[in-house]
Length: 281
Image (cartoon, rainbow, N blue to C red):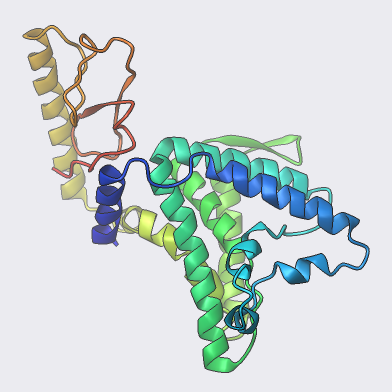
């Protein structure tokens, strides 16, 4: 997973314009339109043209490979809250990761879900109507991993940290895997593999922390911090991008930030804070 994650970082660094900016906005707007049309559809047949169906896709209805993404989870009024919540999460993740990485996350989740549907059909002959439920769940887990202390209002009243909601959803996720008969119980695992690729190393480190490595990283951070402070005393700038070399003196309009995922103390300009190869030592 670590090597694959590095390859994703390298791809994003080399292709900073990959993907559609504000991807979550497009997904939510189209999903909202499908939701409204489905409510007005008295015959309740509209959804049948959008759902994922492996045999129908093989017969030429290829639009189902994409349209199943926009099928709402329900037709209740609470779906509006669902749209808003995941639009917010998607925007935060895109700002944190950058457009290329966020697009890869969504696209990989959709592809894995579709591949699962085809594999089940070829192996068992069952036409599984897969949905994006677990793709959205992987987004939620990603947000909770990055910002565990963020508070949301449960039922618009009770403030609760996002990490506790993630624990509850994880319990339901495990229950779905255990209680659902094989091979249908593989869908949650397959659909959430993109989360494991992006955060698998963090989960392993949390379960089995390497104290020696943590100590080494802390020492490197402090050493790099002192080193940069020393360099700044002998230069005219305060902040310098570790990728392009731009400084806050030459480009005072640029915003400079430090990357929390890099080992050490490394500064990046606003162009490269989400598009760089993370320092590992």
